[in-house]
Length: 293
Image (cartoon, rainbow, N blue to C red; front, top):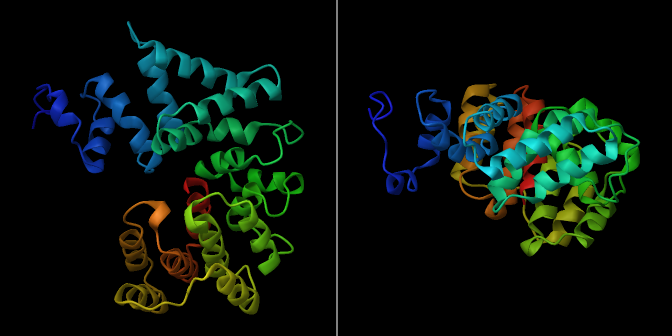
C-alpha cells in the first residue's frame, strides 16, 4: 500500500525486510531508486533479477544526479569488464567487482552482473591457476556452453574444475573418487562442505560411477542415500513425472544457507530434477552450490 501510494517507508522498517519484500521493492518502478539499489544485490543473488536486468538497473541509478560515489565506481568497473581494451584489463575489473562485496550475497550478485562479460572473455586470457569465479559468473548467467571452452585450461581437482564438473553440458573425463579426493585436498570450507556438495551433485547427475561414489562418500563420511519424509516425497514426485511438484519440493529442500545444506538434499534435488527433464536446472543448482560455499 505504501508503494502504491508513494508513501516513503521508514529506514528502520526497510532494514527488517524479508527477501520477498526486497524482491518486490527492486521490481517496483515507483519505489525510490535508492531503495531499489539497496535491494538489488539480494534480488540478483536469488535469481529475481537477471544479469542484464541487474546491470541495467545499476546503470540507470548511476546516471541519476548525485549518484553515490560507490555506485559510480561500480559502474566504471562494469564498463571496463565489458569493454576494456585487453582481456587482462577486463578480467582485472571483474576480479575487483567479485572481491568488492562486503558479504557473500553482494559478492555473488557481482558474479551475476559480470556473467555476459565473463562469457565474452577470450579463452587465452591469463586468469590464474583457479578461475572458479570466472566459471561461476558464466554459469550464473546460463552461459554453460561458453564455460565448457575453459575445460582444457583448468586443473583437475581445482575449484574451477569442480564447478565445471557439475555445470558443464557434457560430463568431463576422469571423474572418480580420486578426483573428488584431489578436490577435497584443497577444500577450505567448513567440514569439507564444498567437497560433499560436489559429490552430491555428481552423483545426482549420474556423472560418477556408483562404486566410485560410494568410495568417495565413505572418505567424506556422508550418506547420500539417507531417507526422510522429504526425500521420499521428491523421489516419488520424480517417479510420477511431475516436474512442478519436484520444483516445489526442491525449493523446500534448499531453505537455509548453502553452507549448512545437507549433502543428501542436494543429491535428491539434482537427481529428481534430472529425472523429470530439468537437467539444465539441475546442473545450474549444483554449480551454484559449489560457487556459494
